[in-house]
Amino acid sequence: MSAASRRLPAAALEAFTAGVFRFHGLPPEDAKTVARSLVLADLRGVDSHGVLRVGLYVERLKRGLINPTPRIQTLREGPATALLDGDNGMGPVVATAAMRRALEKARATGMGTVAVRRGNHYGMAAAYPLMALEEDSIGLTVTNGPPLVPPWGGTRRFFATNPLAIAIPAGRERAVVLDMATTLVARGKIIKAAKEKQPIPEGWALDAEGRPTTDAAAALAGTPVPFGGYKGYGLMLVIEILSGLLAGAAVAPAVGELYDNPRRPQDLGHLFAAMRLEAFGDPEVFRGRMDALIQEIRSNPRAPGIERIYLPGEIEFETETRLRREGVPIGPALWEELAVLGREAGIAFPGEL
Image (cartoon, rainbow, N blue to C red; front, side):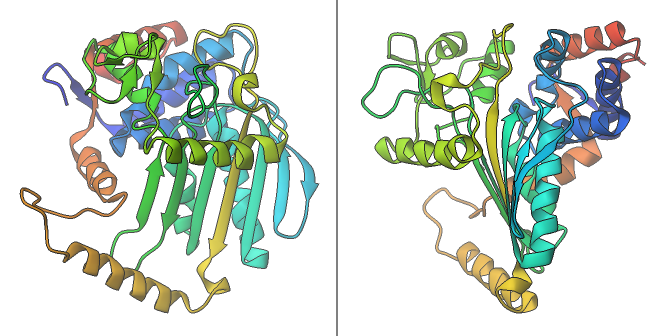
């Protein structure tokens, strides 16, 4: 947290955010769903996908580029699968409904897979696999997005950061939760740095001329760097196919921009899957083996200067526990932006009470 940041209780921030979305036409339960998703991202330290996004979502609602009251329809369905039309609804609303459907299928068949077309940016990807942990299941999601990164060897923006998130339950140990972009960092981290006029680490991005840059604004005009070179590109491609192409959504350059796009919806594609532990064996045995694996990883000899070996998601769980106690840090630029959104909606911003 920067020295200028101030903190707000998570519950107050969530109630305020839901109120803003209700003002802009979302039904109360949907407004709560979006607010819960954004504040959860902040609590887990993924603030690039937290309430930083409220202003952007509101702007797209105002322009009619997101449907505040979607009718999510089932286009195709099998015992373990479904294809949904998100009706251009708010990303977290459509994604939550799709993950619930995947879990419903898994309860009946052991596994459930749901594809979505006509979706929107759905925030922190881990929010949806985390839902599977409550049902003794492994959860997964992938999504495409607007073009930012050229294919390996190319020069034109083509793929998004195409994230992947998987949550795997354990026993006494915390679940393993992998949530990663296929670039070195999510673009939202660069956006956050630009908003706060902070530099970014070297290696995160290239400027519009293809040169490495630490200037966040220059990076936004350029492109994030894929991790692992051609391997990251290969994973981007597979995620594009599994989310956009499989669902019949827009793909690659045909996906609508999230920023600076006053003209058309995004038409994102998503994929959600749930796998019940009991479909593959005794859940207690699985959880016990997960605990043993986690403990063995932690006990691995540490490299010089390394105090602790972390599992994916462990830092985020610890951050969530701490911030639920201490409050969510909000930087000065975002603080003012949220206050303005509150005044527009006639809702008191908790930081001004």
